[in-house]
Amino acid sequence: MPSDLEKAMESMIMVFHKYASRDGNRDTLSRRELKELMENELSGFLKSQKDPAAVDRIMKDLDTNGDGQVSFEEFVSLVVGLSIACEQCYKLHLLKTGARK
Image (cartoon, rainbow, N blue to C red):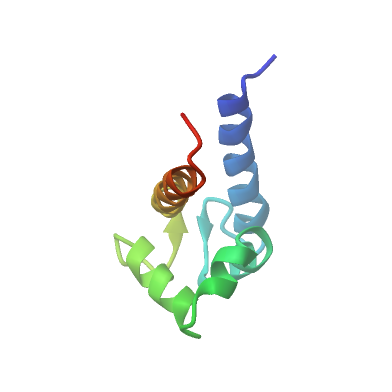
């Protein structure tokens, strides 16, 4: 039986490929695919962005090789960055509520 972390990794892979397969190249996300993924899978994060060009800015930041596509490796950096930010919010919540680790 897979562990919680293994399930999370599988989920991340499945979500990436669910959207990457829409525009023809199964191994990368186009700008449109990235936008759809973020609207459906990261809607809370996207709604918190006040900048209407947030997806374009994120696409530019993720596309480290400049090919106009986001590979799985580039996508993982988005998930890592958001996970770090969420973990920091979690620690602040624990401090405010006086909860112990």
